[in-house]
Image (cartoon, rainbow, N blue to C red; front, side):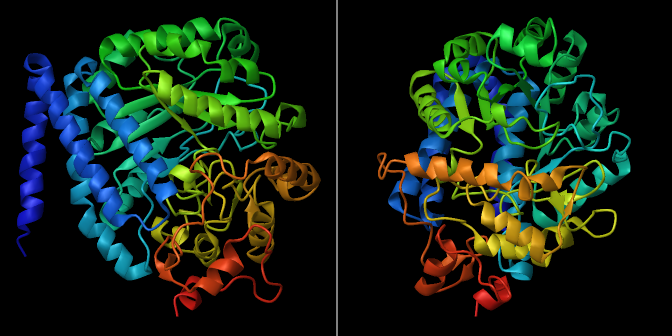
Length: 496
């Protein structure tokens, strides 16, 4: 059946592909007005679909406005291909074209599909960074180009997903990377890279593709970056950033917060240099006691984690760059985004992990479809338990609500995806419990619109399955462990 609304969106998107580069060159003021119009439309849509509290909505709107401000600041300097892809891939493919597919998925499963898929096609890397979360994965395992194509095709055709994060290992060591990016020009590819393999020719190609957007790992200062990534690393990284900037590639930086780089990370002095080097956004992560010989001394203290939260919020207000915090922004995205609620991670072995930091799995894409892996009993129950707590400032089932991860690992016999991964729920459990308790102890009762009554009194399980207020009280509170007999009910039971 002809869909006039979809047809209108398609024609508008095609028009945007032409109009945005032209306006960028000849009428920047008109382009700014148009972006403001899209921002208003997007925020109104967000308000219409929001099911949580006013505090949560305020944080989500803050994040949305930050994104559009980033686009306004930087769009004129991006390559024409990047401008066209932002206009078409984002507006039409990700938002409009995939909607019918997402609705059909909802009919099959009673909840919406993830927003993006993270894939680690290879674990090959030439660095030996201390504290690497991915170090213990088997290096001899990798996904073929055909398998990655299969994953992407299924994600688009069965789930309406057009956003993919590529990590590893070092993605630029996986030979088919650019072939995949070119063949799926209708998708966004966000890659996490150490950045040292980006020469002028690479930067130029990526600008011509317009749909590959790297986050480059850095530790803040030159001294700290070289100490973790090797002598001369900082200079190589910043040179790569400048090449990407000059070519017109949309890119950002990625920092892992540890006890060692805390002062630098939170001072923000390096942020001005990141802006000057051309970064449009920055991601902040937190060192986890996983991966290469977990060093418990690298874990930020509770006070340091809270200081990072306040620092990132300050950067958003004061710096012309969009910043995100993978853990501390839980109240901006309704809590934990893992377990297929917003994303999952496919490893180089083909195992489907809940998150790149949760190294357990029950299924493999070599044995099941991606859709079936996402909808395993284990992952469905995990989504039914979400949000893990009413206070979304502590959203993680691994370091904030660890009893949930331990229960799921035990109940579903989840297998560690590399040697030593099980330690997070065995001998390291007492340390994790102390991290959890310390952080809970310092959380302010009310820090100005963050404390929440959590999400909806009507919708759960991917924020879609119906439950009553008694269910909310029973399975959302951090102080209430899973029931001994049978655990928490399955999504189909909850929805009755």
